[in-house]
Length: 431
Image 1 (spheres, rainbow, N blue to C red):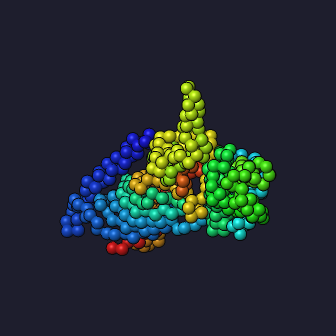
Image 2 (cartoon, one colour):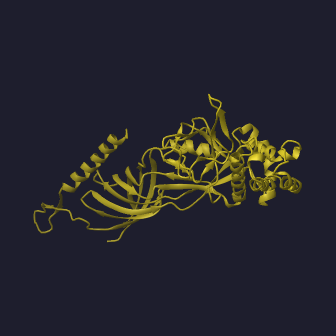
Image 3 (cartoon, rainbow, N blue to C red):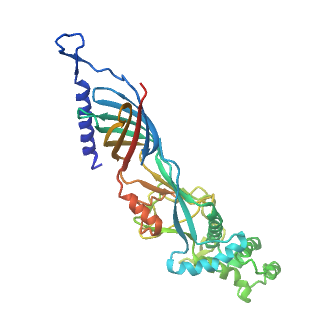
């Protein structure tokens, strides 16, 4: 916005020059006047048409140009960047502590390989690709008599997505494993196993058997048949947790997984508090996993809630709009989406003004039909671009301390408030 007055001033200057050139008559020698005097002639609009093929930082394209004055021409065209790729690398991290992540990952990788069947790597390759293409409308003003130099003002119009990045196909198994592990982790940390001291008493044998099925995934070589048989026989009256070490195997294993933390790609740290942009609701009823009671002043028993009472109802607001979702300094751990993919899109404005200059002349010495020209300028795409992940986090504005290949590229592109345009144009006069 600070550059807007300057941009408008430059556009006004080019427009004024174009208007002056369009309004200026020119003179030709009279062929019928014996004194060979000069006769005033008015220009003809669109009296010829040029076709140009272009190549440069805006991609490959073409445009059509025709004069709208003695020294002014109007150009319209289209360009697109061919798809090419460059690689970036992320590292998978377990938990919030990078120093402890490597040893945790080594311990978990074998487990993940056992129940996914795929080898899990801690390195994820991201493929970056430019995707931009745009229409353009330009006005060229030739301020000098030889018309070699020109000043240009105009605009580009194209999709907001300028480039994209996505994980490679060979890293899909690793991301699938990460997604499966996080699902198990979420189930573990939300289970009453870790919060209810009377878990074996307050939960049905069906719920406990479901938790044991999770254990079968977490500990594929372990046999739990004896534990299941004892629970079936003793659950009603005589089952007393703690008498045998096997009684606590569920809690011990769940606690071990909870201590590991979630698995994801540590991109960087949040540069400011991230807020919920809309209300988030509970998708199902949430029940209490413990009881809360006290004795009243007159010795009466006051029960606040019991195990199984509804703590939060389906549809109740879980997080209100404006509530802090992540705090400044918290690690940003990018996790795969529902399709086991990680993605990021480079977002700019649809409407992109352009200012520049150029130089051109004949391509062939004795043929005015062919010309060559060079253009240099800036395409204003709305300030610093947004690099938004599939989770809605902007790497340019929301995240700092980004390391590796990604960090270097983000720092590089944050410096560009406008896109540099360098273009070569080969032109042929159609008529």
